Length: 92
Image (tube, rainbow, N blue to C red):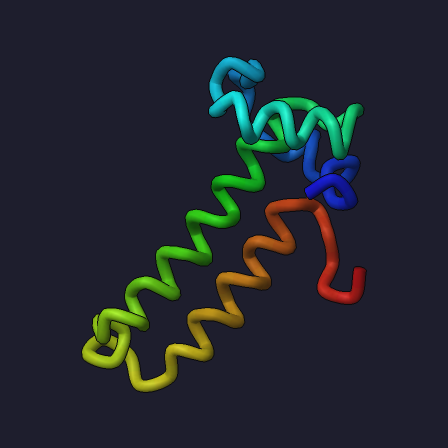
């Protein structure tokens, strides 16, 4: 997220986040390793993680197999959508 944030920042919904929105361990770790990264970037990272984790959880628990014959297409489309939502292109 640190590398993507300059591209993603302007594409995020308004409302802002504060460091107090996150667990102290996560906030401390991010601030130490990426001092210039704002709390909003952490929120985006968690949303990206949630989107991918959701698809993986559906597949692991056998729910995708009953709904689609080609789950790899869903993964590919989700990754492309995530990349676009961050203001990136697939070759970055």
